[in-house]
Length: 399
Image (tube, rainbow, N blue to C red; front, top):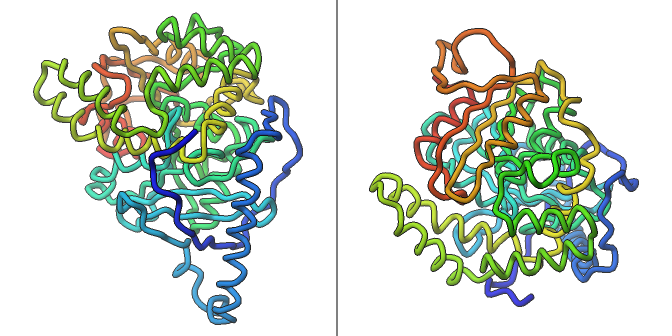
């Protein structure tokens, strides 16, 4: 696939000690070992490692003797002026790319992007981060943006990436928010990370476990249901359907086509405030989706295969004491509230009509640790200012 985006600049990775974890094949692994992306990612790793080695040699011992906090990661300006930050996991040579927004606060929220999406989606929360003194970090999943492809991972494994990045940045406690396809990975964090470290988990319109719910409970359009069913049935059929899905959505790294399609849909919105909010988000959505396919579609195909298959855990296995904030929306064509209610019931949670913040933030009164709120949304690609603010404050316990 030919990308209209400029080539990625050289990035100086920061190779710092992070916890080791197993790289053995997991259940539900996606095997795309023969794909062009797998080869490209390996060459990119070698290039990054070689550059890092040369740069570290030039620095001599000065870097090792300097306070580590001054070298949280390398930064290279992107064409959109958003710094890309790259961490190389020394035990696998795999890279994790991320972007940071807001002040350098120890109150941290990791944003796990949508499907397809990228670290740039976190910029939608930049103003809220600055207003409430929260550091927001958007993280690319393997194969998206500038993150290395990983064909041996499972949904359950993703918590190790977030913990490794948090350790690298010296973050003792944090929260996570999964958007759409990122919701499953947020739930994997709720399962694997102790509540003393993971303070809260947020899920917005998160995809449910298709192999358990079936496509009929996903609340999607008929064509999208067929695409998910094919991914669940066969990897080759899924990739065929995925390419048609990308072509139909006009998001094959073509900003002009995607922007035109979104503009046409936004013009149909009648409420002036909602329309203005969507227009403000449009450029970010376009950049994020095009960045998602910077390396090609294989990262997206792998993601679809993982989400359509066995996650490596069941939602019901997540401890009931985890604080989980669920937000699900319905539109004219999609009603993801079905998935939200399915997940909420397995977590022993309850649905609420409206959440009022108590004196220390969070919902008033005692009740289950998991709470679901559903609402009406005009376009599934966007999140209105009102709902985005409420979601952010609920996760971060801001009154």
